[in-house]
Length: 79
Image 1 (tube, rainbow, N blue to C red):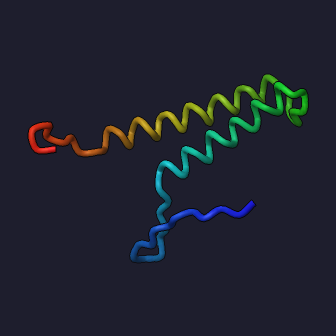
Image 2 (cartoon, rainbow, N blue to C red):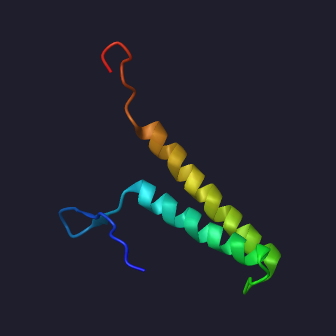
Image 3 (cartoon, helix red, strand yellow):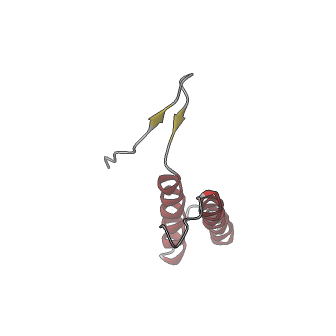
């Protein structure tokens, strides 16, 4: 699988990745784990796998909420 992920280089060599790319990755990983449980192909205990998938989904949701809260509010009259 080839994927292009936009990276932003900062002074000092640090790299940033857009939050929507991170949350998409987390949700896709969780989705794969859920699929493996429901198809009977989970490598780990199904309960553990479901729990891990739930944690990833919650983390993705939390990142989304924090990013939304960080966004500036636009003035409806001028927006």
